[in-house]
Image (cartoon, rainbow, N blue to C red; front, side):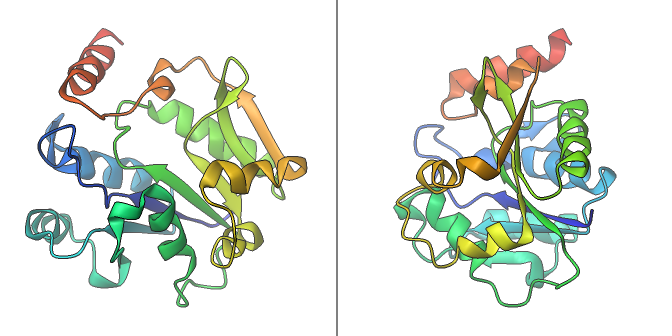
Length: 202
């Protein structure tokens, strides 16, 4: 399996009050942690969907060595997360050798690496399926898509990712995870503090 990671990082972070991807995390930032984690997990390419004219985020991407070719600008991030997903799928220069695309939220650094590795291993066993971890039977992010399904996102009439995935339920496969980090993302300051406590307690 040769996979690309798409980090969804174009949100305005309105409820957080400051850019979520630039929040301190371990020895760096949330974004630095995500890029490093997926690099260690063997991603063939790591792309980041960004909002237009975000100097602070661009500066961090420069510091991390993420090239301009792996930055996907969403000109209308106010349209929501699914607009970022579609911007990524509409790119025409993805290497044809990629077999899978992983969509991951930019604000879930607290999901443990073992969970992400389990997702990749699960996808190797189910290469033609849309693969996700689940909690109490409910599918969670990240979402790992076969190449052909990812390309369908470019032209879909679905209103959101959930609707898109439900229309392809026969191709969906999940595995139950014990990782409580899958249960939330960093929407508000209280979520950030919860994530820090969650990681510290492990």
